[in-house]
Amino acid sequence: MSKDNELNEILNSIKNNNASAENKFEFKTADDFKLPEKEPVIEEKPKQELLEFDKAESKPSEPKEIAPPTPKGELGDSDALDRQLENLVWFESQKNDAEAKKTKKSKEKSTVDFNKIKESLFAQKEKIAEKKNKREKKNPEDIKNQLKNIGSKALEVCKRKQFYIPVIAVALAIGMIFGGVKIYDYSKVAYLKPYEEKYSITYPEGISEKFCDMYGKNQYTAGSVEIPDTSTKKYVFSKAQNDSPYIEQHISLKRDYQNMAIYLNRNYADLESAYSTAEYYLDSQQIVKFSTLFNDYTYKVVAAFYTNTVAEDDAGYIFPYNVCGTMTDKSFEAYKDRIQSRRLYDTGYNLQKSDHFLTLSVDSDFMDNFRFVIVCVRVGEDEKFEKSTTAVVNEKVHYPQAWYDKNNQENPYRFASKWYPELYTFKSSPKTTKQSIEDYE
Image (cartoon, rainbow, N blue to C red; front, side):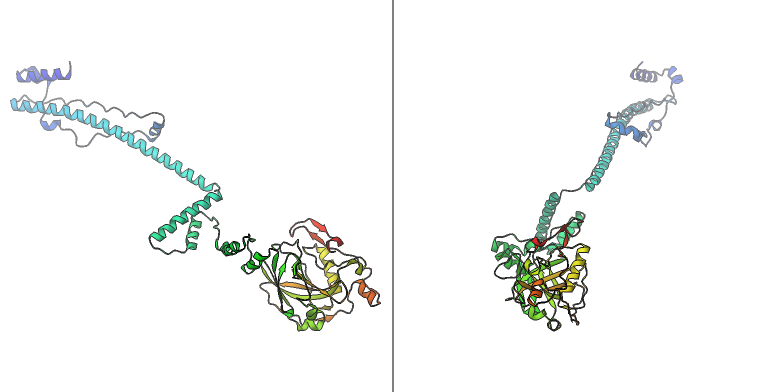
């Protein structure tokens, strides 16, 4: 028998004062049929079960059926019966509403939990991917473009809001954001733009601006030399031209050689009048300034001598005073020994392999095809320049053989070896190369 039929039978029995109904039912008041104020607790699925939503959609468990209360009490009048009937009808409606609401909340709860879990997982994945990207090496070109775009946007914002932020500060801030990305300093090359437009050439990177005009006119420009004792201040070139000072063509001005040589014309620099005797030397300033295209150096004169330029004037030998490069230890000791024997006077300076030398030579009429040479030692940036107060005349100067022949003297150095330097191919390289007379003719 269905619930509706049973209910109808009960109502009919009540209205007909059926005595058997008194034994079957016990009626309650309306207050007994009120539902509890708290909603039934919906048991949530464990977290492990919710994770399974990636495989299949979860179905909320069906709420248990709420059984109607059993009426209790005595039979009453018509009004009481109507109230009992209204209570039963109200109960059925509340039961259906509660079940529908419970099912809806269960579905909503499951959906909310599922979304929260997925959002959490996606968030974790994004964090992992972000960390991985930070560890990966970035493409310099991409970073440069990003910096350029960010810098442009920052400047636009600054202009729009009328802020006056230095460009350097903006660049530093961007550099910090991108974790130590080296930002190219445009100011280091900006000064070259007018000269490049003026002369339509490309300048070597790092060239001093004081040489830009001269280099634009003559790309053989290598620097300048200043000799206060001879009132000389001239440009130096990497190729002999118009009797101007020049250096060896194979020299790289960006390399810091142990020794460099500059060739001068006596019409521009009369070195002999300043350093050919001990007296001249002590009266001189003993200073030479040499600037390459990239650096400025100060040197002190420490020795002076004469040498031949034609092999026949010294029994087939040309002393390699103008050696350019870095010598081996053994080779440097041989070079030092020959400088000491050839120098016109002793200034008290002891040449060291760690020194950087600048050798200047000028044509001389001391003898045909002879040159007068001075040897200079670089003064460190932190060193104080001090003049030598000693110049002891060398009583046994080693001259080329032609001098002894002209003066009818026996050469005490006639058995000396014809030494040529052994150079490292690079300053820090273990490989060396042995030079010969062909390198100095």
